[in-house]
Image (cartoon, rainbow, N blue to C red; front, top):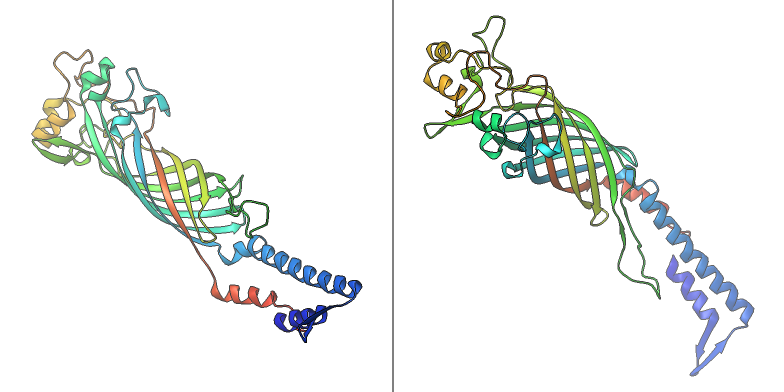
Amino acid sequence: MYSKFFLSTFLKICNIGNQKIMIFDSISLKKHLLVCLLIFGFSIGIKAQFRTGNYWKKTRNELVFGIGPSNFLGELGGKDAIGKDISPRDLEISETKFVINAGWRYYIQRTMAIRTTLYYGMVSGNDKDTKEPFRQGRNLSFKSPIYEFSSIFEYYVLEAKQGRMYKVRGTKTNASFIVGVCPFLGIGAFYFNPKAQYKGKWVALQPLGTEGQGLRVGTKLYPRYSYCIPMGITIRYPLNQSTALELELGFRKTFTDYIDDVSTSYYDNDSLRAARGDAAADLADRSLVDSPAGSASGDQRGDFTERDSYMFGVVTFNYKISKKRGFRRIKSRRSLPSF
């Protein structure tokens, strides 16, 4: 193949014998050098097309694993003022917990993908974190796991590409990289289970009906699952042709106001104690003696007009799964005719 052609070309250029080197005429030499340069350039072009043309079709499946911080926006805790829905100012950094995820990404186009992911994280809130009088006097707290299964559409407005492949004389030899930027939007379902500490133990709040769910006429215990709309942005940094690191900054708009077990108003505490026991009554009303807000039946306990939300910030490792047969077919096209 290549070796025979280059050998014959070299021997035509230089005739080695009897310790003498004979140089052919300059016209013949230029022709052979031109052919060599064209072949080299053609091979580079094929290689580049292999990497940047249809290569994504052979690696359109990708595994995703990640870990990072999580946080919560709801009724409990927050800034030293009355909170507002979807307000980053109401974020309580001290209540930051963790999240891990595992997922599968499928590229439907070179710059578009569908990612299906399972998340497990923790969120929490505590009225002791704020100096706002009503919340601080209410004195409620909780923690809850979040199990989320979501499907997300991703669009790379800036595609992540690995940079220079070849060492070029007079230039830097290290490969350069371009960081990818990808906004995303999706839909998901999640399970939660708010708990609070009571006599040294973590007690599930939903079965207690702390706001009289199931006791008030026309009410029942709220479900511990809901739907969410994941949205955010991902920044991608390719490590090599098969792996990449990503920073995912995601916000979840939910359709429940009970992740923290606080939503509407207080229920008569004596009736709650008689129906559900001491734990239900004590955890429903933990207000401080000097609280400016009342805790009698009907007094405000939460704000049902605003839904809870949570956030994930995940650093993920991504690994492309290649099709071996596809690689062999592409390699066969790169072969050049032998001379």
